[in-house]
Amino acid sequence: MILYNVTSSIEPSVAEEWLDYMRSTHMPEVMETGFFIKSQLCRLLNEENDGITYAAQYYCLSVEQLEQYQELCAPALRADMEKHFAGRYVSFRTVLEVVE
Image (cartoon, rainbow, N blue to C red):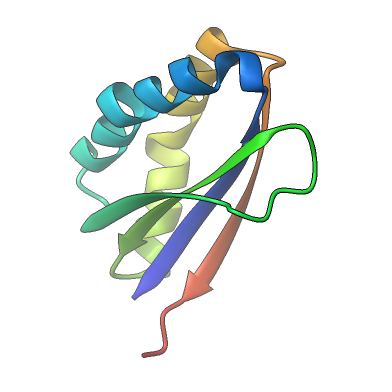
């Protein structure tokens, strides 16, 4: 199983709006693509900067599924995020293999 992790640091002034967008729009749209079998949203407790940091985590069955998602769906979903929160967040992505 593959874990696709998107860690985002959000400016405090838009943190509640971003969280609502993630819960009501972005994460449901990611799941509706059909490439993932499970998702969760975690908040980092040991933040070191002035931002508020979350990790959106999506599970899929194979690297090939993730690659298809990244090619076919991710660009439009990222563009929509930018439309709403441009310059008020920063994200980085990691891909992990679940071994147990």
